[in-house]
Image (cartoon, rainbow, N blue to C red; front, side):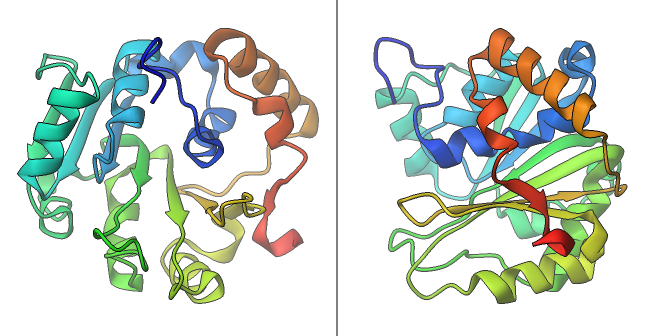
Length: 220
């Protein structure tokens, strides 16, 4: 986190978790809902709530993580727009009140060893898909010394369909962000380029750079 600007997304992979913005009209963003599975340092939660002005919920299992975010990482107290739910994400996302309500689902679930995603089954990703609106997208950070990118992508594709899955190239640190759409689409290059310019200008994200290394997996 940049302590001078706590809402800025510093790391490249965290920025890429916002790639779902390419698939919606920028003017519609404040009317949408974001959910993070795994609070981390609160970066995505703060960004979605404060900068994008979205209704935002983070689901976090460990109360110590929430305490650290509130004490050290300038995560505000819950408001009408932003809340943190202390719960097991695998169980929370099976509650019917979430079904069909989430426009941006951001999954970054790791234990203290960061060896592999804590939740990484086809069943889990099917539950994630059920949360999404018709235009909704899930972004997942795949990282860890014992994780297998190919196996994880196959599980995501089994839940969403291979035509719905997009991926970035890995960052230098080894993070690969994968995106899955509730409803597969292929926006025209000109549309993506126009949205990328708006995203970059309005929210200071390197979205024009994203387009050089972000493709449907069926084209890789």
